[in-house]
Length: 235
Image (cartoon, rainbow, N blue to C red; front, side, top):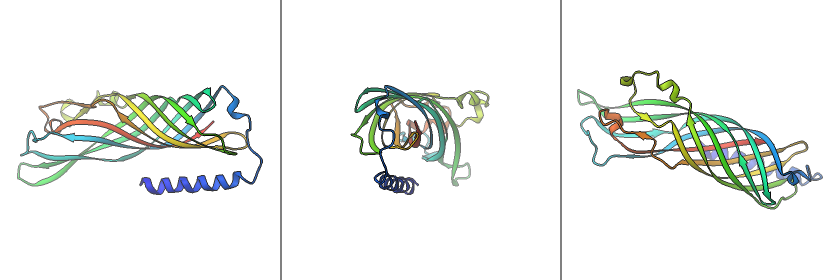
């Protein structure tokens, strides 16, 4: 899924770069501003670093599991502070909507092998603080890399509190600390700056809440969230 999207972005980047060479430079004094603001829209894909226990605690019930990548979207605002010519500090409060699908390989009471799945909704309120390291501007184009960290709180956890304990196959933490890495391209248009950004976030901590009395929870040794983003920025 990611490859066609990335190829589309690269094609758009090439088209905009060629167009930029045929006209006078847009927004020539834009980067002289100390502070500027904007908003972002994007696509996300929730996945995970998953590790099951070895040996399995209940091999006669649950024999394995995996997590399917799920798709979602995000919206947010941008606050950008210039530190010096090639370095900026960005705060981008964002709300991300997504889902995590856990698949469990089980053996039922009749000895039949099957797969049981549960979806865990995620509504992340994120506060990323990132350094944006820019290259020298080339006409109306400027690539950059970003690195930083963020705090994420899962608003969907408020809904889970209303679900009966016996109906929850497993529980995950509602607070996550993550580091982020990515790269992007800024295009200076006539009236604003447009950007395309590819970024991934990775959990520092184990998000799984152990519950040994539940077979589906007991199989998990470690679960860390990974999120891939494709973001459009308007500043």
